[in-house]
Amino acid sequence: MQVTHECCAGIDVHKKTVVVCCLNSSESGKPKRETRTYGTTTRELLSLCNWLSSEHITHVAMESTGEYWKPVYNLLESSFEVRVVNSHHFKQVPGRKTDVKDVEWLAELLSYGLVRGSFIPPLPQRDLRDLTRQRTTLIRDKACIINRLQKVLEWANRKLASSLLILVASLPEPYSKR
Image (cartoon, rainbow, N blue to C red; front, side, top):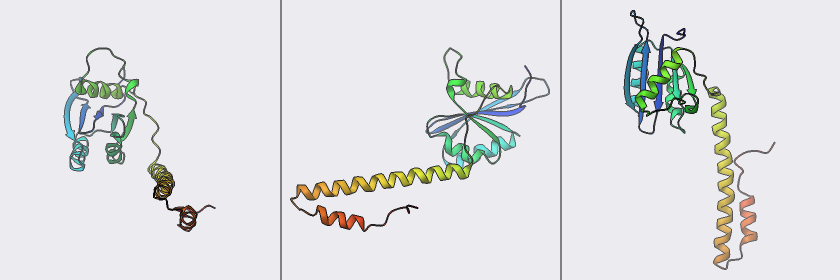
């Protein structure tokens, strides 16, 4: 098979660790492999970025695990072509798997161009999605708090429901209805 990316990396992200394998082409024809493990603090992720740059990595494939991939992606996207990969697409090989074998396999698949990344929207769209989700959560929380307050008042035999509705109606909305 033809190698399409001579300097690439595979990354497996977990809650507390990030396992990385770099593949660099060498003069002997066999790619040079180096695997390292980093923590997930900002300092360690920046160290990971620096290491990838020093190895002249151009393409990165990263296994998507829950929400853990997002901070790593946010740091890498400006310097590398990053593909977030669903693990079910490349873990079809039976046998005992380890994180090191996974990232080596992922890097090798990427080097041959056999890894298709998931769609990750551009940063402004991701920011808008986050704000929209937060707004929805705040509105839902407001309704729950109002209902809880009304229930507590009724349990205390306080008939303030109508006054409470007037009070709540006067609260500002977190958004404008246009």
